Length: 81
Image 1 (spheres, rainbow, N blue to C red):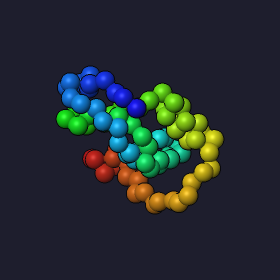
Image 2 (cartoon, one colour; image 1 turned 180 degrees about the horizontal axis):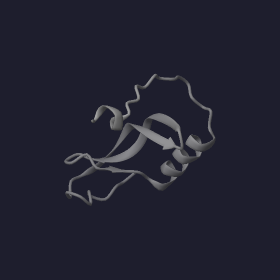
Image 3 (spheres, one colour; image 1 turned 135 degrees about the vertical axis):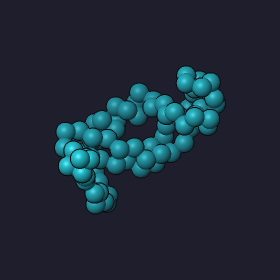
Image 4 (spheres, helix red, strand yellow; image 1 turned 90 degrees about the horizontal axis):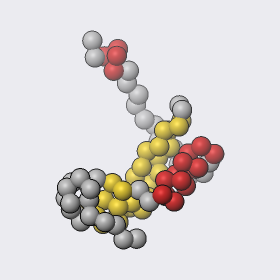
C-alpha cells in the first residue's frame, strides 16, 4: 500500500508490521504483525480503514487468540499518592 508523507513531520511513511493493543470495555486484545504505515522520521502510525475495521471486529467478537499473556495492572491512583 502507498502512503502520503507524514502529516506531522513530512517524513516518508513506509508500511511495517507492528503490534497493536485494542481495548474494548474491560477486554484487551493484542494483535501482532498488523500492516500499518509508519513514519520513518517521527514514528507516527497510519492505519488503513479496512485494517481498523477488522481489528475492531475481531476485538469485539473474536475469540481468535492463539496465545495469552499475563499483563501487570497497576492502579496509579493508589501508588501515585
